[in-house]
Image (cartoon, rainbow, N blue to C red):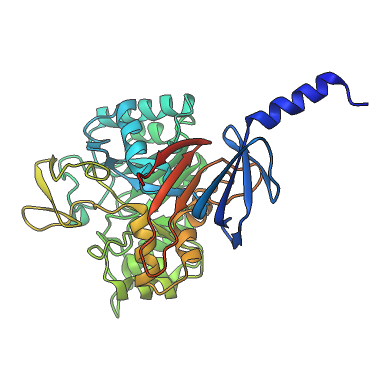
Length: 396
């Protein structure tokens, strides 16, 4: 006979477990019909079987939560403008409406004091296990002025020991640094990699050879491929050529129809081995808000339709969200929904070298996105769970 104490523990466990059943479940590899998934707190505890007393049934497709490795703002705020925990929380809330459950808040080229402030805030968020924040992306300031985009040239600079110490901190969660390899030594790239930094190459006018040297030193990614980098030419492959030539590296792509032509995106997709293309938003503060204009480093940036641009017409980040990126990948690249979803979840996870996100399996984080499944219609996000909490539910 089982001891009463054990029976009580089992009963308490079952009361805490929640089971979700949708029309379909995409686990990161395959699409399954009426597949239950159960979680206790922030962890998936069972598949295939119904656990616990709380069983919730939904229409649509339950998929792994999206992972955005390049997101500058949302909910009317930019991380550069306000490096506070409140900003991070607003960004998470805004992007949850569009299926993102894990963000790397991105700090665009700035002064050293802002770097320190942003790092300290990220450290607090990681220590507090703030839902949705898994690390930080430093996009600059060690870039090429020739390919700076809207980044402030007054802050673009060489990598100093003080900045290196910031990037090498071990309390920032998952770390990405985007740099121009012509302005950062191979030795410094090796140091960054040795301290668990994912080095991405971008905002760069580097040659093919300089790019390959950075890859040999441990760089593994390319930031918004094609944009703000030396282009592929018949006699000089440059950075774009190196990105497509190298089989091991990943690249992010802003599939909003403005940053990259669909045919160009399709060429890139076909050129690389499967699993190396990631969808990124590069989103600014307008996402999940009524905001239609803002200022950034002296630029007046306006939202016109689904495009963000300065008065000169220069692209200034994006107004893209991740579910739109998934829909665009499906239509622009003529690929399956499953592959589009992998680009938003599984492949970013593999790039980040993390095992807790990107697919739905026992032991992984309870981060889910429920999307609509209407024929011949773009998919919409109807619910989002972050760390087991139902943080967003679309109005009927």
